[in-house]
Image (tube, rainbow, N blue to C red; front, side):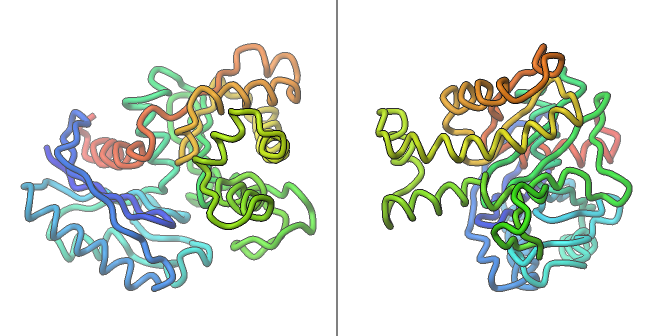
Length: 302
């Protein structure tokens, strides 16, 4: 079986052809251009499907998407203003009608968790939390070896935990949300405020690792916000593992050790006892792998 897999994020739309073993036949990405709205985004996904079908004979299309996703009907239940006009989109139906192939859709962070459970950092782990840190903060929860999506497909919206009541306004319409302080975007904004325009996170982290005092102080402030949110989740869920995904996972062992050290000082002994922190093994390809796994599960192939 060969699948076209597409990951719709706030910044990029990634796409690939993947076989049933999780091997990539090829992959690419294009800018999301989210400000153009939901209709333009659907048209872009349709064009990518055409490109995929022009290169590989496909058996289906599986999509990983930002937003709250009805994974039974393939509909976008809710999306923040990061993707304007996307709420209510009948994505699976429209892609299936366009391609003539079966299509399914799942939330992007749920796909990250599925991908890492299938082929990555969470292999063999039955109870874990997946946290993606990027434009926002997303979450997915595995309980007893199964993805938990909640009563209305909306579990795992950890980016909208309230960290600072009456704090910074959020795209969800509330204020003080976790992702406004602990996302990669929030860190990037802090870096620009302190060091000026032109500073990318990669260069900033090099300064942190080199011991630059101002850079380290800013990092410790951001890390404290990040692990305060994780503290709440660990006390609530008692996972054996937290998998950190998103672009920031490229910081690898450095970030892993910093998060674990900070978090261990904030959680109760029994929660600390066996908790592991791991970076997603497949970086930004986790979502594409998870989309493939979702399709295989639904078609009874796995």
